[in-house]
Length: 259
Image 1: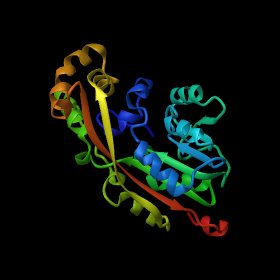
Image 2: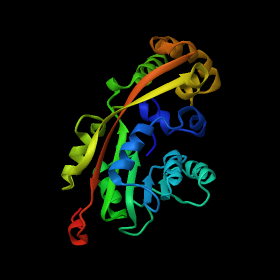
Image 3: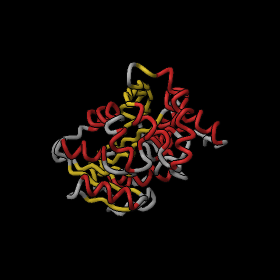
Image 4: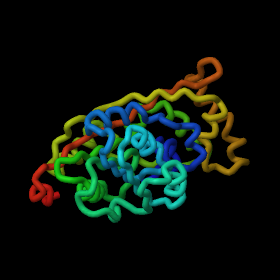
C-alpha cells in the first residue's frame, strides 16, 4: 500500500521525513471526500494504507472517530504518535482485522493502486463498511498530469532506474470502472489539482528520500535542472493531480453480500 521508488505516489507515502515536506498536499482531495461522504463529528472512519496518519489526523480534528491500517509497522508507530487514542493496526486489504460493517466511511488514499489485486482490495474495503456507508478511493493521476513526474523521470534517467507503470486506477475512468465491476455507482468523483509550493531544501528532501547520502549529492543538480521551469523566486511551484471516486454501499445488508 505504499508507493515504490520512481512513482509519484512515493512522495506522500514513503518515509517519516516527508511529513514535514508534504503535509496536507492532498488537502483538496480530502475536502471532496469529506463533503461527499458527510464526514463530521461522530463519523467512524477507517483509512486503509494510512501511512503516518496525516489524513486521519485531519479527520480527527473534525471530530470523526478514526482508525487506520497499514502494512508497515513503522508507519503505524508514527501514526500512533500523531493519534495516540486511535485504533491503528498493521494489516493489509486482505486482512483489515475489523468485523464486517464496522465503519460509516472507509477510505484508501494513494493505496489501492498498489494492491496486487485491486478488485479483491475493494472487496476488503466494502466488508468493513456498514450498509449505507461510503467507500472513497483516491490516488495520483497519470504521470502526464504531474509536474513531479518530470523530476522523477530525470532521477530515473540519471540512475538507470525503471519507472514502474502507473496502472489503470490512475487513468481516466479507472476508479469508476472498478466500482462498476463491483455493481456500485459512484456518487462523486473526478480530477483534482494539487498545488505544491516548496523550498529548494524541501524539494530535494522530498525527491531524493531513500537514496544514500552520496547519491543524493550526485543527484542534486539533476533535480534542480529538472525543477528549474517550476521555480518562482526562492520557491518551486508544482501542480500535481489526484483522481478520486466515492460510492455508497447498499442499505440492504443482503444486497451488500454479493460483493
